[in-house]
Image (cartoon, rainbow, N blue to C red; front, side, top):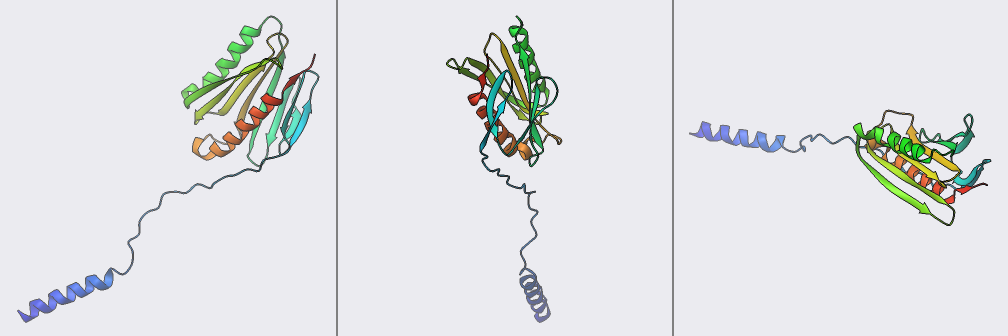
Length: 186
């Protein structure tokens, strides 16, 4: 009986000594929190329109009436394309919406936000694409008689919505700024 009590005491003591360390618990993968500074505004002037854009970006002409506003730090860009309306407004709007909704196969949701500014004759829509689509935002604006401008956001990386969400939101705010400061030229 003495021997059994001694074994039980030794086993109990071994358990108490071995339980000093915390058990190793796997931790979830962490993602870096990305924050971007608010840039000052710069002017982009073309023969057909003008607007203000984030000075932290680099604006350049890419061929005839196509522009790129690059964000090297984010490895992304806003691509703009201008077209003159020649009795084809309905087709331009349908094509713009079709391009936005082509991302529906990879997107979780597409939110269409209309934009109307009758004082400056600017009408259009911003499409926020949620999910692992190639483009996170697309938009078009028009004066409905002469001018039509489309734009889209692309990142130079494989789309992972959770990872690029801070940058995508930042560029969506810049797109809103472009639309709000856009002025057509006669």
